[in-house]
Image 1 (cartoon, rainbow, N blue to C red):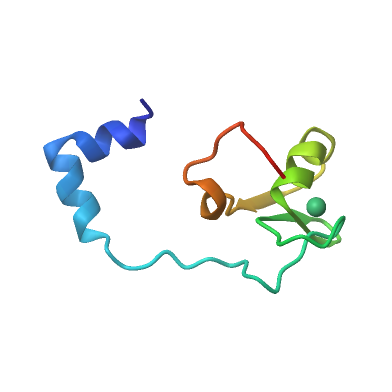
Image 2: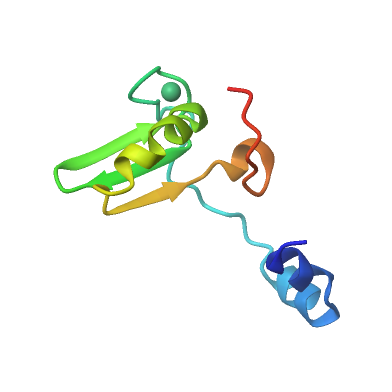
Length: 90
Ligand SMILES: [Zn+2]
């Protein structure tokens, strides 16, 4: 069980969670496409020279290559399958 799940199951934790009913706002939507294959993008990677969007499949594929050069990234893959899992059918 992850720490987050443990918090939700904890009485005090669930009270906290219920207060946060506002919708999560995502930066990426249907119009954002993977720069490699054109699928819907769930990751935006920030580099010195700009940004690249990736689908779940290609982010996973390139993660090891780009993690050293990217400044930051946004992971919205939870829209796909809840909290991030290793499983990938893309
Ligand atoms: Zn892709």
